[in-house]
Amino acid sequence: MAQSTLSIRNQLPGTVTSVTKGPAMASVKARLTGGQVITAAITSDAADELKLAEGTAVQAVIKATEVSLATGSVSGLSIRNQLPGTVTAIAVGAAMASVRVAVEGGELTAAITTDAVTDLGLTQGSSVVALVKSTDVSLATA
Image (cartoon, rainbow, N blue to C red):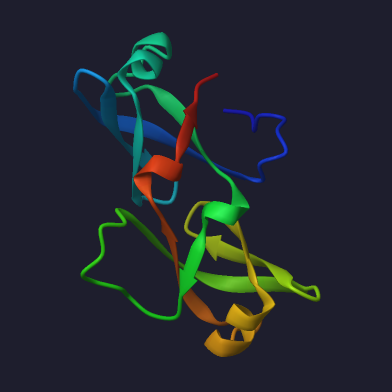
């Protein structure tokens, strides 16, 4: 599946493994190319319009501002999506930083504060876990 042309850099290809629909919202799980499972909470109407079903090819689309980083595995959170990776690049500004993270099957960019980069001691090669709430994951089809 070709990457869509959007201002949102984080676009990870995958395949739907399950769709659980309620009256208003649907929980969609997809296996990413790298093997990780990502969960998206979208409207049931959107799931119907996209014709999402097991086996549907999708792109998980995530704004960089919705990606948080941790320096180790995290438990006791409601955040469903936790993707381990390695920092490949950091661009630091006065207040904000852009951190690129290689994950199995792709790359994510996290927009975090410069203070967070310092406090976490992030450098190129740092091991991190990218955290994304399921409500912050959008899905696109071809």
